[in-house]
Length: 227
Image 1 (spheres, one colour):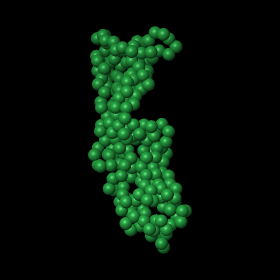
Image 2: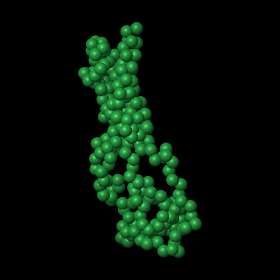
Image 3: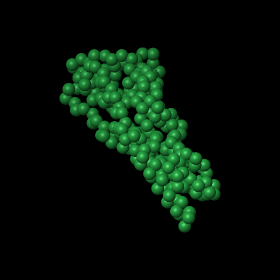
Image 4: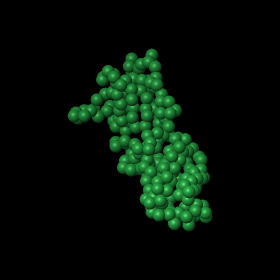
């Protein structure tokens, strides 16, 4: 969570601290709501640009190695619900995004997704089962590959305030995911997969531009109150 309180305003206190303390609780609450919204917008904008508060870019996702053999077709044993025996999956024109593999499941006769971490064993693909003439699945666009596209939406990133402080935060499962990236912690990409260490990507933090925008918002509010 990124927050800024009435007693932790940095350079704001040099010229506006006394005025802030003189405001009635309702006026301070109104001011801090404006600060929270300003801070949320700046955090959303920076996350959208895939940058940390210091201006450095988020560390890119590590591109998973494609399973061998087969660049266009893969064959593997996979658990089948309700059965003690795994099924053999032959998948054509597949692509992998995160923990999921998606492609044309020959047995099902359609596009299906499988969890990479649940694959029991990879099997060789005979030449006769290769789909050499098939095209590759369309790769995701740059927009689709951008990280944290969903969690920076206003509905998931909360901006709140009271008479003493303003804050921006995530809640529930989104907060847990954000914390893993914020601190660079370990987590399992899938329930059956091993734990991996995620790169530190600072979703919340103060940049010089954030402080400037907050300063502008506070100044504007104080001038409005004075008038």
